[in-house]
Length: 134
Image (cartoon, rainbow, N blue to C red):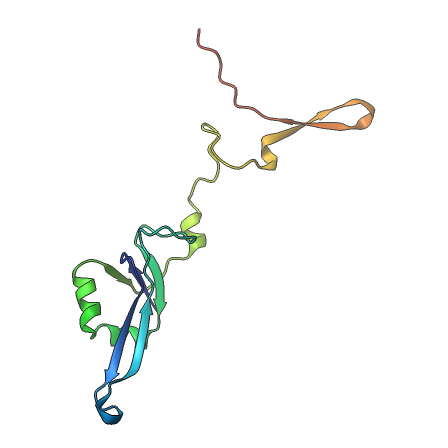
């Protein structure tokens, strides 16, 4: 499985036509769609490498011989990776909570239990109050 990252603004469908179609009309034999839309406002999240498309080994072997695909690769619009990184491995070292800036969602660890009357407990938020400068 190959992973193609495209920085092109539009989807590109690379097509191979049959040269011996009925009455001289070329007929599409094979096609591979590589997703585009990098830099275009969309609902999906883009990656720094571009928009991701996964293709099979057979499709990539054919794409390597396609003239337009080779031009896009040579001009730097398309990047091909053999393996895809596992999101769990990549995210293992990421910081999920920054206590200094408090720029993150609220989680249960942000609160503490305080005893109240009649055996009840009150939940109080923990704050990162900075000491006043002297």
